[in-house]
Image (cartoon, rainbow, N blue to C red):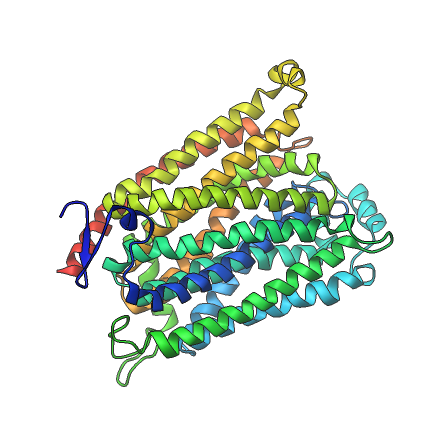
Length: 507
C-alpha cells in the first residue's frame, strides 16, 4: 500500500510512520542507543552554555576572545586529539577506545568544579595583573592576554569544544554507523535524535535552576561556584552512565543476530586481518574525493554558524554581564531551542524517509542563508529602528539578542534534524577503517577547522585598531553569503556520489 511501510510482517499506519517508524523488536537496540545519545548531548549542551559564560564574563575578557580561542587554541588541540585518536584506534578495540576517549573529559570537568574553580585566587593571575598586562601590550595582544590570564577557563572552553567533536560527532555516530544498516538508518537515526533532543529540554530547565541559584543562597556564598558543582556533578554522572550503556549494548545487543550479523564486533579485527597503518590511512583519507566533500560540508557549516554566533554573543555579553545571568539566559535559550528541534526533527525525519538525500541535505544551508542574512541586516541597520523600538518599550540591543537567539536556535534545530542525519548516512557504505579514521579526520579536524575558519576570519578583522564585532559586520556578512553558496555546491556534488555508492553497496 502507498501509505504504509512494510517489514518484518508488520505495517506502519500513517501516524506511526510519522512519529514512531520502528518495529517493537527494534526497541532493544533503538532505546539504549537513543539514551546514550541523550546523555552525551545533555553534557554537550551543559558544557556549551558554561564555556561561553566563563569566557564572556571572565576578568579582562569579552566575546571577542572567542574567535582567538577557537582559531589558535581549539584547532591545534583538535589536531593533537585526532592524531592520538587515530593512533589509539590501532591499539584498542572500538569498545575500549570509547572508554579511553571519554574518561579524561569526565576527570577534567569534575576536577574543574571541585578543585580548580574553588582555588582560582591561587591558580589564576589577578584581574589587576591582567589589566596591567593589557595596558602595557599592543592592542593585537589584548585578547591572547585574556586567554592566558584566565587559563583554566580557556582550558575548559577548549575541552568543551572538543567534547562535541570527540564524543558527539565522532564516537557516538561512528558507533551508530557501524551497527546500523542503510535501510534502518532512515528510521532509526531520527528516533535517536528525537530521544536526544529531550535532553536539551531537560538541560535547559536543570541548567536554568542551577544558574539561578544565587537567589536562593545566603549572602557571601559563591553562587556561581555552587552552580558549577551541581552542573559538573551531573556531567560526571551522565558520563559514567554513558559508558555503562555502551558496554550493555556490546554485551546484549550486538550479540543478537537481528541487529548485528557480522562475524566480528565493531573494531575487533579477526585473525589474519591487519588494521591499516596510520600514515597509509591518512594518505587514503586525504586523497578521497568522497571524504573531501563531507569535509567541505562540515567546514562550511562551522564557518557560517560561527560568523552568526560571534556577532550574537557579543550582544549577549553586553546585555548580561553577570555569569549567572548569562548562563540563565543560555539555558532558557536551550530549552526553547530544544522545543524547536523536536518539532523540526519530526518534520525532518519524514523528509529524510520520503525525499532524496539531496533534498534533505540542502535544506540546512538554504535555511541558514535566509535566517543568517536577516540577522546581519537587522544588526547593520539597527540604528534606523531606535525610535520605533523605543515606542515598543524595548531596545535594539535586546531585540538583537532575541532575534539572534531565534536564528541560532532554528539553525541548530535544522542541523540536528537534517544536516547531521544526512551526513551520517553518507558514512554507512564506507569500509571499517574509513569509518574510524576517516570520520576522525572529518569530524574532529574538519569540524574544528570549520569553527576555526570562522574564528580566523573574525580574529584577523578584529586586529584592525578600534575594530569590534559591529564594525566588521559588513565584511563577515559578505563572507557568510559566499560560504553558504559554496556549501550548497558541495551538497550537490556529494549527492551524486552518495546515491552511486549506496546503490553499489545495496546491489
